[in-house]
Length: 149
Length: 214
Image 1 (tube, chains in turn cyan, blue):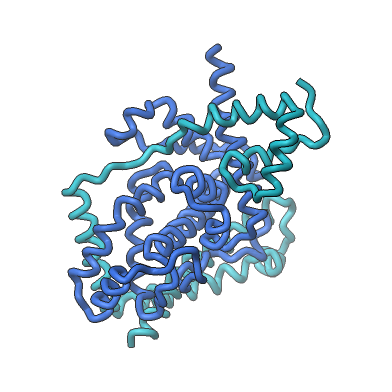
Image 2 (cartoon, helix red, strand yellow):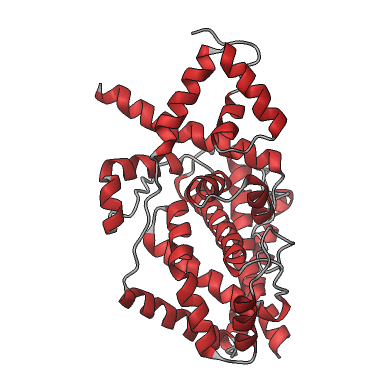
């Protein structure tokens, strides 16, 4: 079956999920009346998605009780910050400072040579991202302390 | 991918904008009791939403333990942000927003870690880590069949965190795309593109399999 210039796969998906506005729906329905290729595509879409249910997990009452207790306990603990966490945050700040020294911009100063390839640059950026993630997690805790105390 | 202009961690503690359904009276009362220090009220809140939150995370990640961990984090963030929670949306919507963003952030971090430790040159290179879905199926999963589950999660593995979130929220949870756009802080056009890509990828996985077996 031959496709037409007006065939639009993305609109078929939106039509299937009922996400087209009235004008779009009308336009597509007119197109479907004249386009066997799109009618066939829509049928295939319905066949594959109609009965597709994402798997889930079933929590038993015991699991639910255990998890709920863990969350409640952690919530009350987070309201009472521990001093040693401040040390962890300080260590993270120090780690970030070191990582900043080996960013692509400072790489030459740090190693005496420029990064050679896109791979090296990409790796350095990834390292920076990971350091920032860990740092921001610790900053999150520091903000908690400021807010509470 | 260039991370220089990308936030390392998505901020999920802010109070969401007005979404389609405001909070019910019973939810407001429950939150008020929690604010007044009633631990039993918080337990009631967690217990009421735990299954749906764990399931949402599991469907996006395919790993039960990680899903439980992220669900825990979502409830802790809700607890922490209660003082500023205005009640513009249902608790469930707020939790969906937090869980979705935690999952997206988690997936992005995992992808970065894998690239670092396996020195892949490009994001599209085959991943040396075969991250199979959690094999411990629940009774409801037995209806779906192990093979279908694996195919579904295999297809999901090929999607970005945002694409997974959009597909699960629309296909499984039935959220309108407009609401998904607000939940994920994306433009509606972007959400539509993510949904299309996810559907394509999932259908491709099933079609490829049928061609192999026929």
